[in-house]
Length: 203
Image (cartoon, rainbow, N blue to C red; front, side, top):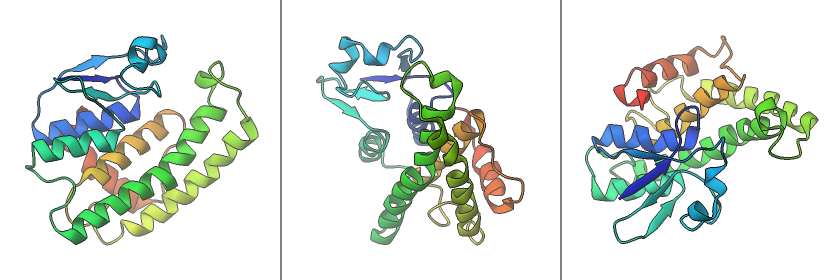
């Protein structure tokens, strides 16, 4: 089994590393250099036709891409501790929050990264006005999250889950590219401190 990924600050490979750390699964990451564009090489596209990381290659050659899909595989093969919920309601809420994080939080962060950050300027045609407009979109997502986290310790409820992993990898990456959490969002900042104190956050 081979896990292809990339080091910090890449947020998606980090999701899987945090998940594996929470599960106690030891699987070394085989690095794919994003700066050298190794993820777009024919060799890697044979594993993942979209040329992305992370990608998990199983012993029989089967390849699984997309972070949540990889995490679900390990949830099935290493069910303890459960990170996708245990009851029907918990599982539905975790799935709901994964989608909310990806569409409402990660989308503006990704758009800012692609269209307004200098490190990506040579990789694509940037529409900088659009990129910069995502600052306010992300600020709105922060306000919304701050309200949601007022009465519960974790994103999907009382239990730490993969939804928290998706969010911490996003807000940490956002901070790295120049989109920090605003000081007035005390609930969101407290959540970040709580989740970041877990040993898995160093993965």
